[in-house]
Amino acid sequence: MNRLTGFLYLALLAIWSSSCQQPATLPGNEDAIPESNLKATITQLLRYDTLPSASGLELLGNHYYVVGDDSPYLYRLDKNFQVESQDAIFKPEGFVNGRIPKADKADLEGMTLLQHQGKPYLLMMGSGSAPARRKAYLYNICGDDICREGAGTHAAYTIDLNPLYQQLEHEADMLGGSLLNIEGVAAGHGKIYLLQRAIGTGQNVLISYRLSEFIPYLLSESGAQLPQPELSYFCLPELNMLQAGFSGAYVYDDKLFFTASLEDTDNAYGDGEVLGSYLGFIPFSWIGKQDTLDAPATLILQADGKPYTGKAESVVVRKREGKTRYRLVVVSDDDRGGSDLLEVLLDVE
Image 1 (cartoon, helix red, strand yellow):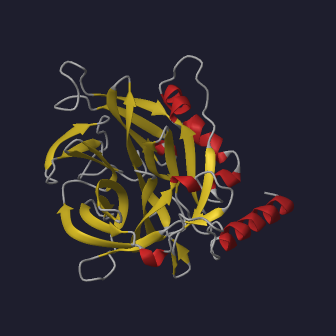
Image 2 (cartoon, helix red, strand yellow):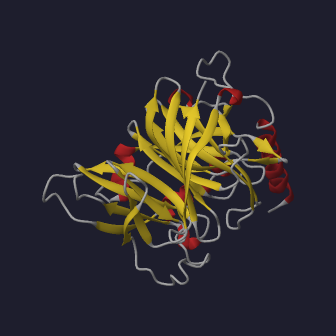
Image 3 (cartoon, rainbow, N blue to C red):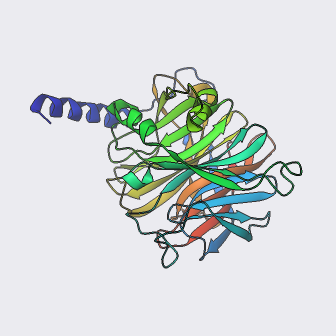
């Protein structure tokens, strides 16, 4: 890096950093909701010692699907959150002591439900923060009471994400001044949303693609080209000079709900002390705005009012109760090979 390039890079980092120090909601935006109007309270907490490092969560019918960032398995839970089954996504090579070593793991940090040719698939995407983490897996979950009889069987196949991730890395502003670290994936309203987690002085970035372009690319259909992203930038709460970073996403109604955590680390590879986890949402009317916006978010609190200090990784919305309350399920990674599952009430007024 020459002196001029280095100066420009530092200048950009200063702009990105300072942009999250000031309120950035759009003037006159009726969707703007200050942090104080949100409250997230845990109503149930379950621990799983044999379900490692939960990082992705999806809901289909009465079943919850969970994937871990250092596990080769997809876990299915019933409506009472009991583990019913585990199916291999890929060959569990190197899977020792219940986890894949950090240098080899696929780091599947995001999972979402896609519909293709009338059948449901789970798309699981690696974070991209290391060479082994640039793959996706498309898993056919057709079966049970989900699809009509004879519609299909379970299958998973691997997708190389390197060209897509290289496209995002080509220009620094696409990643908000951070190294690539995709931590959340959600689909809905005709688009798929990737959440780039802020690291250090970088920004949290929402990367959107049209599903009509993204799915043909994933499936390597004839004539399919790299889809073009739409970028939106967001500031999340800060504590001790650290900004929370996106960790999971879910589309429900007119909002993109997200989890975020505040972790004391300056890179996309290592773990750090977790200072707190957040729940929030982005109104769809904000997506694509040119401003850097303050995303409404609030700390996840235990029943006694103290902050939950686990690392929230993914979220689904079970249902809405009235106009201002949502019942959510959150999974959390303890960085020691276990996982938490939280039922949470989120009040938005």
